[in-house]
Length: 451
Image (cartoon, rainbow, N blue to C red):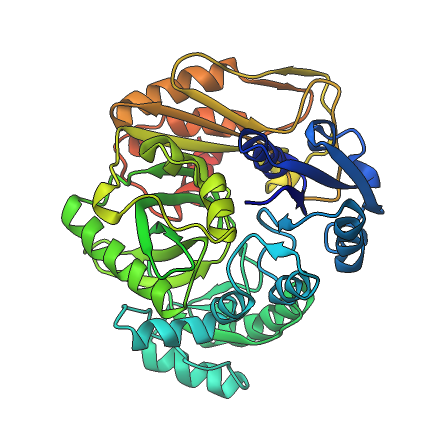
């Protein structure tokens, strides 16, 4: 087992990893930017090292600075969290070349599944349903038009190395396709250093269902059930729950078996997530695999009783899984809301600034994962996530009722946040009935504005 781990991240995930390490008797090293000197993860870690300026490329994306900090602190493992360098195969290779264990999958698995086109091809060859579309990067507008006309509109352009909704556009006709193609390529190059994009059929009104994978280095791979991540804005998740109200035992078994098959095909060893779109008639299609811990991992923890960060660390240390597939049990229901420093009434624009009043909810069935506190200055340089509010109950309705109560208690002032939006969602009969699709937020906001 590791003796000291450096957390190459910030915010709530850095706090989450530090807490897991403390419970495992592993010393921790926090790295931080000049903007994060007063951040909670810096206070909680056993050691803390400043690695650069406030912008991510000066600090949390600065591989030489992170490796230097790891060598100075003499760590034997680096946990990348999510975002930043967590899915950077080059970073994983550098860690290993410095005899520091990258707490995640191999660089080969990251590189393979990070290329959306290669990942789709691997899943297709493994017998996993994929969305119809191009199986190689789009060469030019004629290639894009040919593909779109073959699979028929609407279609969606996606960045081959993409994520987080960047380099992605929905198109309903030739004119829109041609105008969006160059925009997506430019955005993909700027965001991921790779301008390759592909075109696939746009599945209308789907649900976003993902399966949590846990795999060790000895070939043992299991899934821990599904999460429903259908409530999104700009292709980024806002609410996640486990299990899904749209997945029954038979479908769970089928999707779970295919998710495990896909992970094995990628020689995957760590925690990871195989993601699908589920359409209205029950058909499902692979869309991507995320080769890291997910923001929404707490809902899986709450219904399985497993600590995914600890499992990730144990697997990275070479330990075998301590649980078999038939021993995984889903109990109750868990729902997570992402509390972001954003203004939903103004296009979800970021709202950084100082938090003057902060009161988080508590009580039975409430879990809070956060790094903020009264007096904390939310910097403008990073993701706007402030906190994750997770509630649990015996049934979905129970978890919703706890969430309604918790959202009423939650206060973050004077910043604009998504708390009010979540209150609206959790009082909406459509959401309570579970009758939602990935365009739910757009439709609800339009409804609210018209009223």
